[in-house]
Length: 454
Image 1 (cartoon, helix red, strand yellow):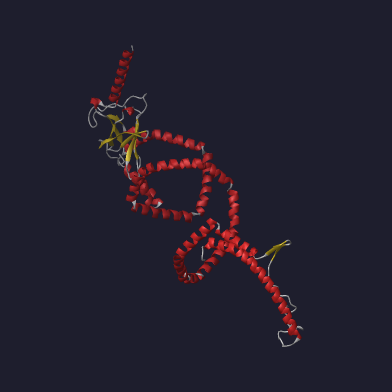
Image 2 (image 1 turned 135 degrees about the vertical axis):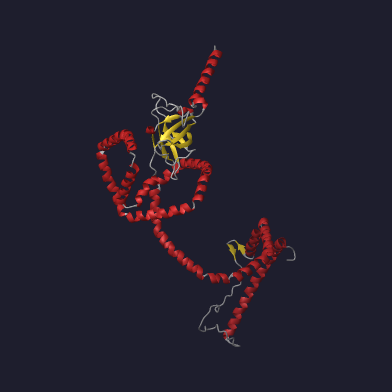
């Protein structure tokens, strides 16, 4: 049962494909061609596109002239989905770009209308006939612009003269145009009715236009200058047209390379949204801070100017110190070995504790020369006890520095001096005894620190 259903499905698909091919082809298997009659081909050439609803479906296969001086354009439809054309089909020649390229915009009609009849004989035999009543040709923009090269009165005269010249001896053609224009006049009437229903909106448009054009009128000089500058820019762009064209050709590749970067930027913006929100909340505080920095910046500007002046003045003395710096550099290089040895010495002294021991020697050596009794420590010293030890500006009785022979003062001074010598001798003997007792330990300590014979 499944095999039978599969066979039936294949047969149906094949029939549909054959029908599509048959509908896209004319008699004898030729491509589906439409011979459309236009009043004016409007500079259309063979090979230009045929579009339906904006999609390219074929091209112009050929152009000719009918016996009635009409343009016969042969349209070749390549896409079977848009065939056949029906009796209510329409085609119009439209501008494709500003450089004069054209294309044919068609509507194949509705399925309820009969199909176009094929041409049995004569020009376009085998193609399908679309009459001139179902086609239209635009008036090119450059032709419209040509009438603006003259003053308005002469323009109107040109239009009337050319209209009379064009309609001379063509009354039948004018009647045909009027009859064909009847639907257009009806559509125009509908447009006018719509505009009449929108009169309030049109009035508001006029009022709003006056509101908008008022500022433009006040800035007409700037607007005129913009037009002049735009003209200059256009001329410069025209001179670099080849480079601009090359840039446009390179733009797709650049956009392809830019796409990953834009994706990363999108991710960065998503991740940076919280930061931006926090910055927005702190914007007021940052504004106040920058505002408070303004006086500081003004003061700092003066300080920096003064600093620059001082630096300029000190440049010469600083340059003069270069020889001294060079000498100091040489001194440092020459002192490097001694400094290295001194560093090793101080490191060794610090590691062995010699500095602490030396300080202890100085401390204990000082205290060793002093005495100690039941009352505590005392310093041994030689005291000069005399009534004449003070310093006096005026002579003192009995303390004259002039030692007269046989004088009583000399005898008194001699006796005092003898007593002092006795006391000094006793003190010296006591100090010598103490020094003798401490000399041996101190000598051994110095031999340990600086070596024997030092």
